[in-house]
Amino acid sequence: MDSFDDLTAFLHWWLRTRTMKPPQERPLTYSDGFSGSVLYRDKCYQVQLFMVKPNRTIDPHVHPNVDSYEVYVSGDISFMADNNWYDQKEYGGHIRIKPNCWHGGKFGERGGCFLSVQKWLNNVEPTTVEEDWKDKDGNEIGTAYESRTN
Image (cartoon, rainbow, N blue to C red; front, top):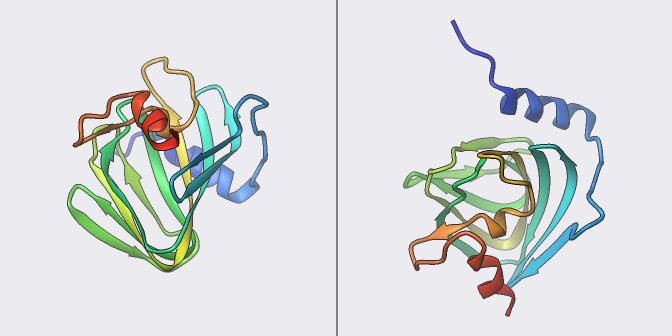
């Protein structure tokens, strides 16, 4: 018997309703070749829209306090999760990214746009996944955002 998965239920609800509820504090983020917008935030649930310039790469990393779905919107995107690559070409196509799943992406000639539908864990208040980050270069939670915007 399958157990109820609240993140999956939230994903389907949000994609069906597309309810907008952005926060007043820091709704937008920018870093080298990337921009993000928080479209919805309520308690531990959040939806961020990310736009990536053409021919960019997001290096492998994890978000230790976030369980998410990455949802294709448009452009040329290949998502990587646990060393497996997934070419995304159809609106709404998605992959699940668990908190300790190493993941990244490659963006082609048209760049790419995707949604990150998130459940924040461990009583961590939602901000942006750029601040809940650990990568192979030693950047830890809270440091990757600073290092990419300075």
